[in-house]
Length: 364
Image (cartoon, rainbow, N blue to C red; front, side):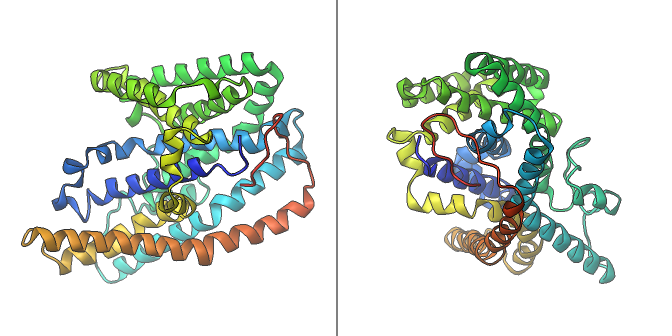
């Protein structure tokens, strides 16, 4: 496995973009019916589960062997590094949404009290809003960050257990645990509690990484298996087996993107996809504020339905502006802030990061 997981970066970019289009297809671009002529985006509500699987894989890739022996110092280092990665931009977007809501209240403009719930603001700032509800408050895509924060908190314990069990036994336990959670979610898995989805996805990501320990990945025919999973999905979607089949498909794609040379990985290392992956966190977190502010302005200023060509141009411009703003936020806030915080954290935690034999660690 190479140091730079460019395939996973590209996959993360396409995943973030699909979530954005899924939400924009609700508002402000609902009249465009994007999901009708691009059916892939109908599954945008499940794309977040790819994030969970990727996260489980990459966190294992970087940190699994850090927890052969649990220590408060090692756990503290891990938690602070994850906070440095996710919290600054997250809290900035929440503060922005609070400011916009306060302005709307003062100007007697309409707002959604279910999203802009001041009673849940502290919950949101602590990233615990998805631990006991759907978490759809303030910057509503942040529910998945709340769920992922939970996974970070429990990862050291899970990692210690998996490493202690050994390769095969660890993989078996991950299969059973993830399968049990998916079965518990049942037919309504993708509408179930966020922590069920995030934990199952995270465990699947860890399982995918464990398969690299067992040297099984190189022999996997990724394309035929992915096509078979799609075929099975067409028959099982809408049944209790649907969520399991879709998550298996997502896991296959993640595994394929983690290993160079196969056709799936080569698709996602396309440079525009890779750059989308680099800015994917900014894109994911700012698209809801853009939807709420610029989307409403667009609907007030533009009458959809008069010219199909003009509507396509306007919609494309709106999406382009969203990606451009994500680029600017990534370059001028997300990346500098993350680097600055890491430079303050790492000198206090000079632990050597663990890695499985033959694996070169990439920093996250």
